Image 1 (cartoon, rainbow, N blue to C red):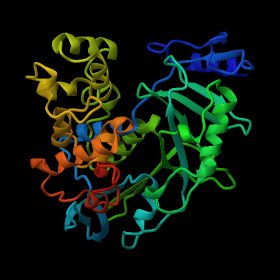
Image 2 (tube, rainbow, N blue to C red; image 1 turned 45 degrees about the vertical axis):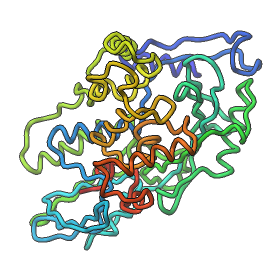
Image 3 (cartoon, rainbow, N blue to C red; image 1 turned 90 degrees about the vertical axis):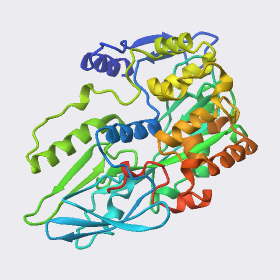
Image 4 (cartoon, helix red, strand yellow; image 1 turned 60 degrees about the horizontal axis):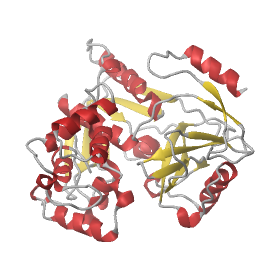
Length: 420
């Protein structure tokens, strides 16, 4: 059945970039337990979701968008044919803006956000489902990811992660409450560890867990469907009443269809204002993506900056692409990169993230813009925090504790997930 499914997968998908699937016979040096003798291999794409969000915000800024990070939308009121929107900025100050259209693209907050709007119906079209992941020391050599079929019918991925680790996930659990408070449960941890143990020779337990994280999927509601059975499709709902401001709600969706969803949403908005430019993003690269392939570009970086370690050239390529040249220019030695916070994180990169990518906190730097937090000690984090507190561009952020309290979303790019 797997082979037949992959045959259809190969037939339906264009193979201009990714190779087709094939059958593999496991050898003695396989990382999998001896009972597994046959596997099927196929190729797919992967993405750092946090980097994807930031780069889309940067692309929007380059097109003229006003990105307001750490800014919460408190309320929205209809005023004739426009919305009067009250916002709260990073320092807690409120201000208002007016808009002819409001797009509610707040993900798992999509229905709760509507409660802040006056005289607005709240549709019961969405269910929140939590997914959790574990990060453990690397389980095997090689760049392959594994899809593990569990006895309950669900699948779990094991993916090479940040060179030294393996990422294990995900789970599916119905969730209620604040999406920002989502965290992995004991049951989810045990579930993921059990699946890994049943497939891999390397034995891991709870003490091996380096990091964990959880997210909440905003899925379309389906009557009598379990969390695993809910569709990953999306719904774009447009409310365009006469003599009233326009409201667009986006429910559901997933990362692999985000551009198609966005294109559909913008097309609907454009039609309301007689804009006829048409779609253009299908072939557009995100900021920093203007190179042929990662290996070639990493080698080019090392030729241009011959003092740059190979591991750093690879990381810069993966996380920034050609954007890294903004903080590498005019540098002639590693010592020119400024203060060393450890694990090859230097002040030049931190300054770039503050100046160009809206980073203001240690979590922004270590987890959202990079994943260097996996390598950081408490002492190193304190060193970075002290540096940020003295940064000339961050004077308005007087204390780290104020940062998460200043916004309804602490992901550092709230303007991409909350309507402004």
